Amino acid sequence: MASGESQQAQQNWRYCGGQIKLWREEAGVSRQELAGEAGYDSEYVKSMECGRRRPTLRLLQVADQLCRARGKLVAAHEFLKPEPFPQRTQQYVLVEAEAITVQWYEPMLIPGLLQTPEYARALISSNCPPLDEETVDERVAARLKRQEKLASKPPTYFSFVIHEAALRSVVGSRDAMRRQCDHLLDVGKQRHLSVQVLPFATAPTAALSGPMVLVETADHERYAFVDGQSTGALYSDGDKLSTLTQRYGVIRMQALSVEESGRFIRKVAEEL
Image (tube, rainbow, N blue to C red; front, side, top):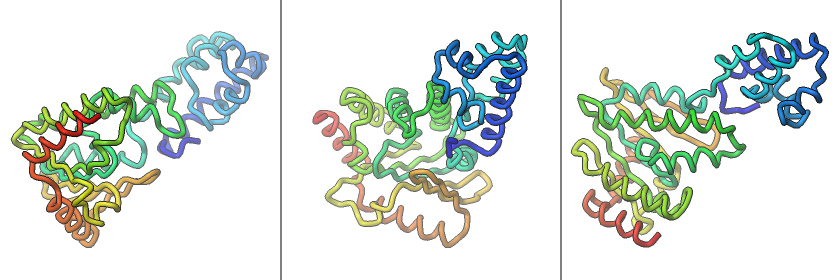
């Protein structure tokens, strides 16, 4: 079962998969027959019936027709729509929506709020293990929807520091990365937003510990979010906030100025 899904989503998978199995057995339809009609491997259908995988709309439609469920199985799809964000980031996204300041450091990837649709799709579609197309579409759309925060009124103040490695790591294609660099330059023209580059040559050891986001909300609550391979942690306690704030400060001090960063990004784009 996908570890990135919430407990509620996994329960929905199990329930709907169980309903498919009950209707199939009641109608005298074998798993092999259902799999053949849907164009799936029998083991793949079994994993959906057992709730290890999310039942697809295709399987629900075929099962509904074969089992004469008259729309009762297809109706389950409403409860199986992919979650727009991985479980590890769901709490952070709620906090981000309420932010008045966001300070974001990324060592290996372009920050989500600054990604082009092309970059976001290439990144999300290359997830390991792979995501189905419906989930990819949902998560790309959700990521782009979050970017509306960049134009919110009153404006939120954003400070982004991006490691040189994130600019030089090709996500999608070289042409896509050139367009991503152009997008960074365009977005960086906004007065309430700064984009700075941390070059390899000046990066402090604190920059090697991974990404971090520092947030202050309209109620002046402060949070720090640290994202990992399969887990994400949202902190609000003073000690963690102090430590991560100090690290961000050290990283930002070694970054290029906004003007120097713009020239650096143009240079990287030309070299891609």
